[in-house]
Length: 111
Ligand SMILES: [Zn+2]
Image 1 (cartoon, rainbow, N blue to C red):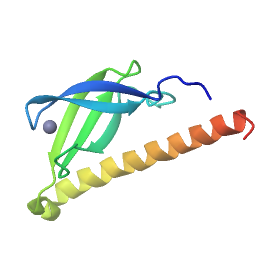
Image 2 (cartoon, rainbow, N blue to C red):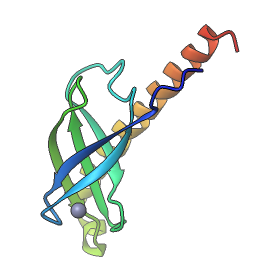
Image 3 (cartoon, rainbow, N blue to C red):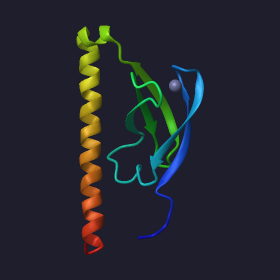
Image 4 (cartoon, protein in one colour):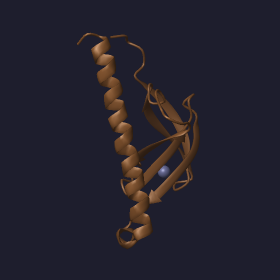
């Protein structure tokens, strides 16, 4: 295995905190996407109730940021639940693809 950097650090402007945050992304995160920019969904660092979506282009530039505050009241909002499900589905698809991609890489390595 090469010792190339596995992660790249990117910064984005958090619309919730009105601050710049750093986020670590796997350096191959932009590979093999169906379209660009693609979504990267994660929970906000210290504030776990914030769901953050980054829109990242092929060159790992962050093109957009969305933050959703997970509040108790949101649980009762159907619109919000739908949004959430869409995001989670996206995330699952992304993880599935990454998994496939990794398996491919592994089989190429003859493991
Ligand atoms: Zn923030």
